[in-house]
Image 1 (cartoon, rainbow, N blue to C red):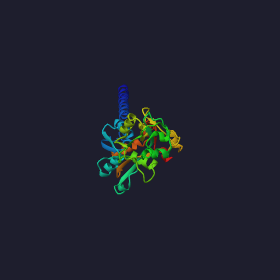
Image 2: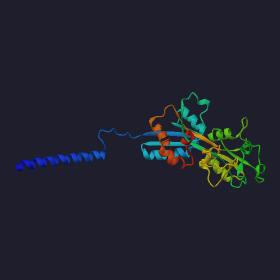
Image 3: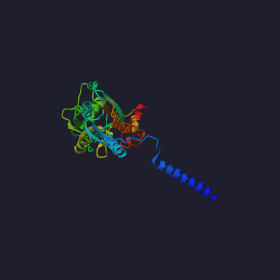
Image 4: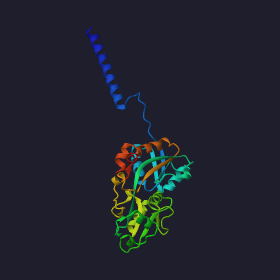
Length: 288
């Protein structure tokens, strides 16, 4: 009986140990019956708006850290380039500062609105004017006003620095400030990207240009418009008028990897923590 009791206790102990080991293995590896999450792999190409470029590149870097099997190539070139390339199927995503025009109506483009980009007028730091009315700004950009003394500044010739016709920033500023039937001055200096425009304004005395606010820094002067200083809260309260919705277009329904990337940009994690840090405004503020 003693030997039998010992044998029974030993068997029970071995079964108990087996169960404990199995529980430890299950805790380490997760529920064996739970479906395994498939790791994302693939490549995404995006092109277009240079205004939106900092946000998309930042999102791409973070997304690739989370999903090492995904490669994302992001290029600028202007909103027009992004729309054209995504419509042709040359890229997965076309970034744009403006809505796709009627010429893309039958191309199957799907609009994904991702952020709000505030725009500002900027000058070289030697310009003595720090506030323009909308009418004065329009007359300067169209070339009707050619000297800063005509708007309260010193006797200094104005140099206009703008973007190419494919630029969404150019199209937006034209629609927001310039009266119908008029256009930018023909002698304006044209730059291919927002970064190049900012550098040109910084280095050219008497110059004025336009750009989305995330590119502006203390090396150039940001003008007030109609007496209102640019601040994000002034967009929310309706006193700052220069801002546009940023779009990321796909041709039809995005593939799985592109959709996951777009979902990440629109996630609370990215919108709440990164969008404002990059000086954009979360798209939810527009929807509200």
